[in-house]
Image (cartoon, rainbow, N blue to C red; front, side):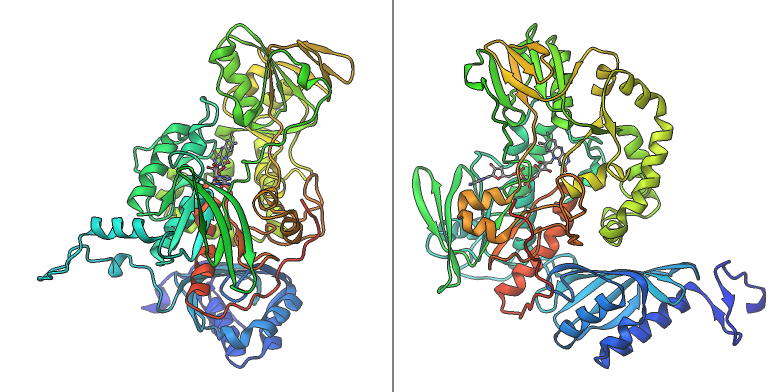
Length: 613
Ligand SMILES: Cc1cc2nc3c(=O)[nH]c(=O)nc-3n(C[C@H](O)[C@H](O)[C@H](O)COP(=O)(O)OP(=O)(O)OC[C@H]3O[C@@H](n4cnc5c(N)ncnc54)[C@H](O)[C@@H]3O)c2cc1C
């Protein structure tokens, strides 16, 4: 009977006649790996990695977000961590797939303190990529699914408190008579997602937000804004968007969703509250955070401080000769109210990335005379092509139908080490260039300077490296190509009372100037709130050290300072787009929970500081 069963093409006989298959290859690797680890033999485990290999660990081994490379990297990491991590129980969780050249498997494992998940790619019998992530802490599992709270308290109890009474009591006490363990400064989507994770993990947390309502950081952006990322990419932890949610969420709709989410996830969210200063009290091992709420200063003393103040929150406003004498309106893109007041007027938008394009298009639609000033080349990718070729396999209805849930997509994405991620991206953008060749030709003919990333790796790498330099085209490029949005190239020399003058002498009459000039590094927030000294100690936030524009080397392997320990004790940065915020909030929350309950968290490979901002 067995003889007649068809074996997958990837199964074959080894020299001694045993059937080789993806499952056997993975089982053999995991079993040998586990034996080496249990024997405390870092060397034996290290040689199971290919010379060209990458082990990405999200908190499970390193209490850090860290990628090590090759057998040397694995050896070094294991020598430092093996004893206290005590990893074991490695198994494949789904039928492994692939050929002897490349075998892939989803895995589970345990450490002394937690349970983890991961992904393995084998080239031959050696590991090429290994992802290990901490999923939960033993003894501190989240109250969900089988562990969900009862809600009702059956029986009779004279001291019964309702859910509402308990919530009200907490609101009265937390931050007043009891101290939060964590204060998150910034209640945008980042602070809210992390707050939800911490709530689930029972970590007393206050989110401090200067706006009046959750979601206001979206509501206050220019009125035409819709998310550029599709719904499958944007879910928040625990609550997915419903199936009727639009593919690209209008900004006010996402604002309302965040407000609803904050409420139903039972977050302690102090709106209309501004964090004014923070100082670390070394002796007490806690922060002194002064916030202004309802006109009064309140001092909070959390053990951990998270800045979730936004990577698109600190405007870069250029200093240009003549700005103060300009007679029209001028503002940064983040302050742009929308086009209504500028019908029939002359608008000059300085910059050529996402915000510049969106604002130009909305002004043109409203009947303004619009000129975009482009200083350096921009990467443009048409939304349709990006959704189809760039994101479709992971984040789309097609992906969901083929079993790639958002959670799985996040893990697949995480399993590709940053060092080689561009190699996976270049073919995608080559295909997009081919598909949209006509479109790009017309843009260039209009004088628009294009790029595809310094190594042609496109949008996502630009985002990870510098967080800027691109536009996802949802229509404005056509207006640039056909001249409806006028284009000027070069840098701005000065402003006169009624115009913008470029360095080649071109004068652009203007009633409105919008500086769509991007945002500064998040460690500027640390300087504002804490001190320049602490900001310098922590260094640049974001980027990989790719040695490309705005992302100077040396190579870091992971995003600088994001979601992981920094050089300043008990100071953390959280944020990124909705995908990153959703996925990495788990690892930051677990790091904070472990510290709250006193689980030792020796950090392997704390990031060195090479750049101040
Ligand atoms: C035009 C534009 C389009 C974008 N499109 C997308 C998209 O399609 N998809 C996507 O995922 N991302 C997009 N982004 C990126 C977007 O900025 C982030 O995804 C998102 O806003 C990040 O959330 P966040 O919580 O990290 O920061 P923010 O939303 O900026 O929130 C930070 C919060 O911190 C508060 N804050 C700052 N300092 C203090 C203080 N001292 N005290 C109290 N509160 C303080 C601010 O009021 C703000 O609400 C876009 C950004 C811009 C500018």
